[in-house]
Length: 114
Length: 110
Image (tube, rainbow over all chains, first blue to last red; front, top):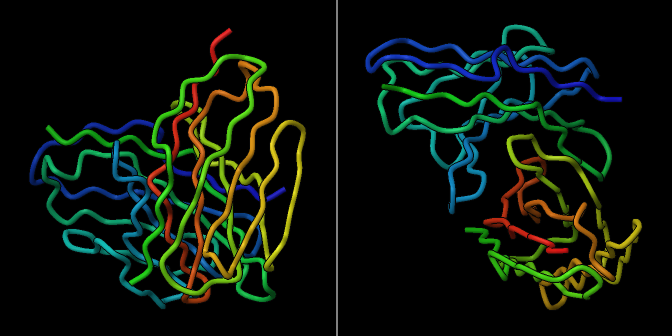
């Protein structure tokens, strides 16, 4: 079974703080993703990585950066947290080869910025 | 730009009834994914549909894909309370990146 873990389930940070969200997958997947989920807006892709040190912007990258130094780990960084970044953050991973590209999701991190 | 629309966004139904959730997408795609999300939890994969006419069934849920109409349906048969959750469809026109619909929140009442 694919396992995707996220470093925190709940996080409370102050405006202006630097925030790190960590995601680890144990199935040697090439692709990793960060989404945010907000009521009424569904899931929106923030960043995507298809290999170590490789990244692509998703639909809403502003205010975020990412780091992928190792294949199994993908970090989302909020350089200076703002209240409009209060959200549920979901990490996912998938294989690159083949047709399926099914994404497997972590449990999510609910971030509150005060 | 790929857009994915689900309807309805909210569905309240009685146990034992049947209903269909619709997922329309705006550009050509031959793959469609359905996920389930329980409150406070992450997304769980339900179905992967990989070709026109694909149909998959699991228990009381059946998903189908019509790539020509750019439409997928998730049909619920004889709903039970345990099916209460939010259901998302997703597709792609760019390899590995998925675009998700807004979700359908299903509540099944006893």
